[in-house]
Length: 328
Ligand code: AMP
Ligand code: MN
Ligand code: MN
Image 1 (cartoon, rainbow, N blue to C red):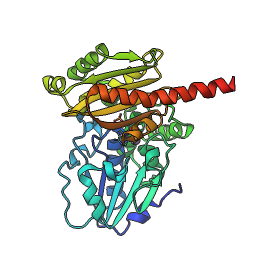
Image 2 (cartoon, protein in one colour):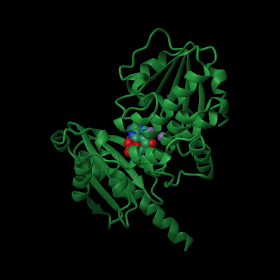
Image 3 (spheres, protein in one colour):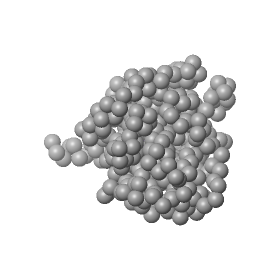
Image 4 (cartoon, rainbow, N blue to C red):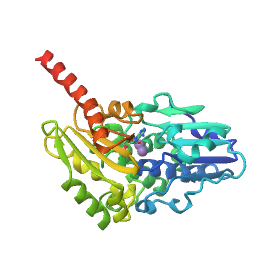
């Protein structure tokens, strides 16, 4: 998809509203704050607002974190709405504001959002992160260390620190440019990625201890129920990282992590290593994401959910086996 002229698209706007997906991750928060800092600098006349649902405190190190409005309040009409790292259905409370905005811009890297949901779209499914895309659109004359740091954090989180297969030479070139702006890139990785609270470690421990391998060790699943979350007074943010630890279990192709969000309702995270397209699996249950990382919400008992997910994974594994046989 062709690059968009971001400043040109926003130049007449008095009110600009930026938001991303519910349960925002590092890429979502990094891109939204980078966009916020950038537009405030490049378009000082405009009123720029950023709203997100309860961002994790670890991202407090990004400038502008305190200005994120969790109430989704709008003063008057929104001239430009910028939806980042998602399509409109995952905007949560901001979806209505998006619908009523004069102009909608959508920047995303999800395969499941192929065409984009805005009037103006910049969707590159192969890109590592929305942060990388946002950076491509920024006029370098307005860049500074704080904006660079926000972008860098976004990229770092969606690539598992330049580890996942979505990392490209372009991603690394962008990262090289970004660290030249001079922020502490070691500290941001420790603070936002590696550091875990005691609660997070305890929940990770439980999830690993109670995990189950199946399909001859090719899959691993773990679940955390509402009772456990309540016992630790924890929320979804405290479960970040569990799925990554499950995924790196030796021999595993596909990892599944579920936690109970309501009565008979589970948020499901899926990750794969080499060949299972987990986006396809998630899409079957109304979710989406990327080939190697996807998610969805499933209603029903844990056993029903895992049975149904396994069936979808098994279909792909069979297909893969047959394809390989033919090639032999
Ligand atoms: P998660 O397992 O929640 O970390 O999500 C993995 C990837 O899938 C991220 O890129 C999410 O943005 C995406 N994703 C998660 N849940 C959904 C959903 N219900 N619909 C579309 N994409 C999702
Ligand atoms: Mn995201
Ligand atoms: Mn992303």
